Image 1 (spheres, rainbow, N blue to C red):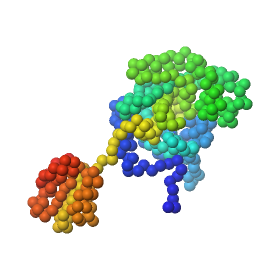
Image 2: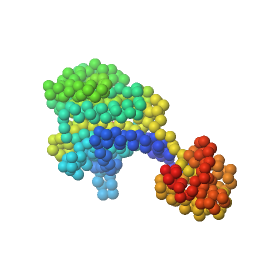
Image 3: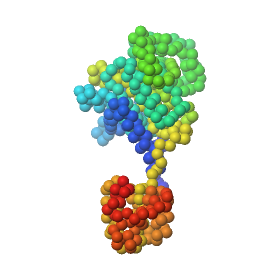
Image 4: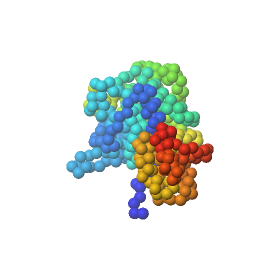
Length: 415
Ligand code: AMP
């Protein structure tokens, strides 16, 4: 073979499709229950959309974005995340005027990162965005959506980690404290952390290098630097989460990778799927919409990864859907029945019944064998007698029971 799939991507093979479709359906159903409506944006956008919203110095923009020029030299990027495109569309389509402020999405994202288990260059995210209010109830509702979703799938080994990163004012005081803490240790930090120290000291807490991690452990906590209104907001989020029976642990280390987060930040951790153990994460982004040219509008959302969720489901032995067999396998004896069969199959398929028929198989034995291995529910046997009577001999392949059914009653019978 001359061609290979690009590194860090994967094919969704037919055997894997039913579980993903079931997950998508479950997500949409829950979104509906929470009052969210689906929005789908292009997989590429102006690169500047992400550069401005995520932050020029974020890892996503600096190292991970698939950036390209089109034939006219315009600079685009394959979307690395879903929030900025959703907000772009919200503003461009004036969804505020239509009262569409609870939006959900599902689709592929792209990041140039080192592939490993649970980390891909094209991966799928689902997410929700609530736009238009700073009330702490909405923070808790968004988080509880995620919690209820995972509970409804049957996942057990979950840990919800919660933090507040404050508003830009408390963030500034906190960053001063962080720099004061790290300054005496600069010679022991990794090169990336030296840049973080200058540009975004908060990201020092997110470094995965073991020696840097040791410093992060004892670093000052943002929670000690919240101003009164941010501290109150955080208290109320926690109170609503308690009311909603959503258990959480406080982790001041949750900083999230992108620049636009304010106040509530959270992550759902699942131990047991390797190093990439964050199933989903999100937070409040009160500054983003104004930064993107809209009027100042608070918002909050989350995004989760499908691949890691599927890994977690597999780790707990949870199967959402089996690849189903067809409803009917048609077994024809003799070529005389061909016209009758072709008509019948068309009619059944148009009525939503899945039918398998292979005109190249002629022996009864071979056809019955194929019917069984297809895992069809029924086989319709059509020989001379059936043809003359305008009926089929319907065999239930599970119980072995047979009965004659008129051709024109078959659709209703199988449906
Ligand atoms: P983020 O947008 O980085 O906050 O990621 C949100 C969620 O998307 C994570 O919790 C993961 O479940 C998933 N995710 C992020 N990056 C990747 C990746 N490269 N491959 C697979 N899943 C990812």
